[in-house]
Each structure stands twice: as C-alpha cells, then as structure tokens.
Length: 585
Image (cartoon, rainbow, N blue to C red):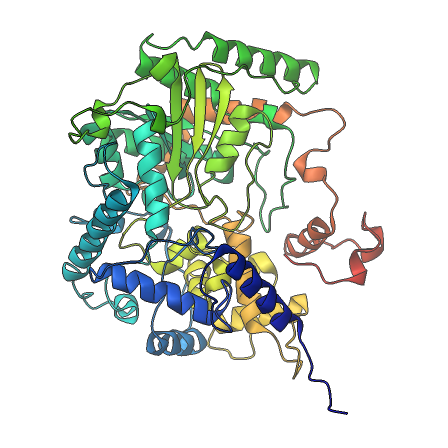
C-alpha cells in the first residue's frame, strides 16, 4: 500500500483559495502566491512597476485581498547591511536640546508634490477613467524619479538610494483621497502634535485652499502626548505658514500630567465624552460655513454630551434620521455634453448637509477623531498604520456628515527613522530597526528610562547594545539557540515610541530660544486647563486610564519605575495570571 503523503494546512488553504477562484472564473494562482506570501508581494510590486512604465494594466480582479495594502518600498540589501554594522559599532552621543527642533522645509522641500486626479466627467466609462488615472499616476512617479537628486554628504540618503523617504505607491489608496477631497466641503487635516511638520504636506494644504477653494482645518491631535507649551508653539507656526487654515487642538483621551519613564498604556474604548476639542472644531466650522448650513443640531448635541458628562452619565447613541437625496457623488448629475467638470465646480453643501473629510498620514488619529466626534466606536482603530483601507461616511447629525479617509504617506525628505517612530511606516515590515532605535536613543535617555544595565564595553552605548540589554531584561530569546532576540527587542522599543509611551516630542524651530515665552503664553494656560477639565470628565463605573489593570500595564509599571525607586513585588499584581505567559510591551 503506498505511503500517504502529508497534507499541510498551508496546502489546504491554497486548495480552498484555488477553488474560490475557479468559482469566480479567475485563473488559478500559482502555488505560494497568496496575498501574504513573498511572491505575492513581488507580483504586486511588478504590477506597480509596469504601471509606472506606462504599460497597459489589466483590469483589477473582483476580489483582491491586497488591493488597499500599503506599498511603501524599502532600502536595498547593501544599505541594510551598512546600517546594521553602524548600529553595532557607532557609539551614540546625546544630542543637545536644539536637536529636537524640526524645520518643516527640510521635510517637504521644493518640488515635492502628490498625485492629482486628472480631469474627468460623469460621461466617462469606468475603464476609460481607470486608464486615465493610471497614466497620470505613472507620469507622476516617473517625473518624481527624474527629479530626485543624490544626497549631499548624507549616509542616510546614500543608503536609501536618494533623498526621498518611502511613500505610498498604491494607486487605489490615492483614489480614496481623491474621492474624499471631492465630496467634502471642509477638510480636516489630522496632524500628530508630537511632529506636526511631518503630518502637514504643504502641497496638500495649498491644493485644498487654492485649487479646490475649500475650507481647511488643521487638527493638532494627541496634544496630551506633548506639553501645552510645545503644542501652542506649533499652533502659532502652522497659523503663520497657512493663514487661511484654522488650527484646533484635539485629543480623544486626555490624560493627567505626564510622568517620567515609561507611560502606562491607556485604556481603549469608551469615555468619548472626555474628548478635548469638539467645541472648538464646531466654532471653526461655523466660521467657514458662515450660516449656509444649519449647525444648531451639532451644538445641541455637544450641549447634551457635556451635560451628561457633568452628571456622570454617558449619552445614549442618538438615532440619526435619514437624509433624503442621497449622499454619494454618483448621484450627482454631470454635464449632458460630457464636458470635463472640475471638483471645485460641484455643488457645495448639497441638500443642506456639511461634509467633513478627515485626511492625513497613517497613525495620525483620523479614526479616533471621528469616533470622539460621534461619541461611540463607529470606526475601528489600530496602533498599526493602514487599518483604514477605504473611506467611510457617518452622520454626526442630520446636517453634518463625517468621512474617514485612509492614511497616505506623501513624498517627502523626512528621515526614515522619523517615519518609523511616528508610526507612519509599519514596524512589522522593518528589516533593520536598529537605526530607528539609535535615532531615538540620541534624543532620549533610553538606558535611564528603560533602566538598562550598562554595557560591557566602556566606550558607551550603541543601538545594538540598547536592544540587547532590553532583550535581556524582557527575556526575549531566540527559539533555536536561546540567544538574546535583539530584533524583537528593537521592535518592542519602537512600538513603545509609536504608542506614545516613550515620548519623542519634536519642537518648532527656535523653540529653545523662546521657551520661557511659550511656557508663559496665555494659550498654554488655556490649553492646560482644557485638558484638565477633559480628563476629569470620567464615566462612573469605568476606571481612569491610569488605574486600568491589565497584564500589559503591570509590565509597564515595572519597566517605567523611576531610577532608585523600589519596584513592587510580582505578588501584588492585580492580575495573578500575568506571570504564566510573556507579556508584550
């Protein structure tokens, strides 16, 4: 009797995938070409290269799991090897406080633009419109590649093969941005208060205000992760650079004063009434709309939320009545002669509804802002960038509609390490995370914050030494040889920074010289008071973020203790089963 051949779970999944494709009428994919395989990623990259070269691209399949995935690219193998050697050999020197100042012109230099949607009309067929967009996107990529200049004496630019940082190469994601910009009346550009210079592309702001002629509101999100003085300084800088835009500080979960060391992980979900900034956003929208849309229902909703929070209750989800006339742009009537219609010529405030479009970079907090405005978890959020794959619309009131757009990485000259620490580039896709750890360690005292043991060499700390010491402390070991898992430790440190538990807050240029001015500014005191009021509006029955007891937070309390402070014994942990498994920071 012949011996039975083993049939793995991977082959079973491939068999089911081929069966589904046969039912759809699609050609069967070769083995190992699934959406999560390396060959599948190579196929998507080769398709993108064919589109860049102007070759005809076949129409997309009806079901493509990787259609809306981030496509950011990465450095070459030689560059990765050089970075790895530098992380092991280069001793990190602490930089002065002025190194935390970030010049916006160094991030988005002259000549850097973003893909624009070509002129189109409703008389076009989907195939014709798709071909026109692909041709325009390919021309944009070729022009951007031709204009790239070599880095001047910078090792980081040489490693990356140019002065451009990784940016979005997926046309489907840019189509989502085009659609949101066209259908929205006011654009909410969500920025991270820790590094606003990275989150505000000047080309996008100019396109919205001048070419589209629409209102722009810069939402300085996550102001609880930085000091009020730094947030005030960034607000004044953004107002000077974009005079027609409004700047609104915002946070969906205000915290009490930050402490030294690792910060506790905040409790997720619930307590949306504590958000800081919705009323300021309403006032900014009223100044832009100018009475053309009745926003009294929005103001009444805010009054009810604040009154319920003052009573210690959470407002029940409001049943929104349907708005007649439709809400999608496909219902618009194009010109009968098929002439090209520019987006700015579309009808504003259609059916008396104000549409607010939330755009920005990945991990800037667009979905969290939308949930805070709605007062419920209507949109899924994640710490990993790229959670939102396609735009979604939700009615805040019968007269106000919110639109959540996927995050896009714009072409820039930002250091790739800064993109990683800002949460723009997925940490799980990093092949060499040690350079980003070195970038962080030169600006923050990581050995003191993480309470790491001094290295064996007397020369000083390197990025590799920091990762190895963190792996030793956390118990990260490789599966085969039981060595310190340095790669996992580096990813853990980067996730702590992306989550805001290791706070790298960059400052506007010239902040150190005017630090006393910003700390005594009236807006700084007002913002601090606003955050304090928002943090005190808790919901009975739910513990504040600092008191939430999870296994992860017990790990954080141990790692984030002050130097010289006694660490509580493990037996006093609120979760007695936390020691049975290994916790992830």
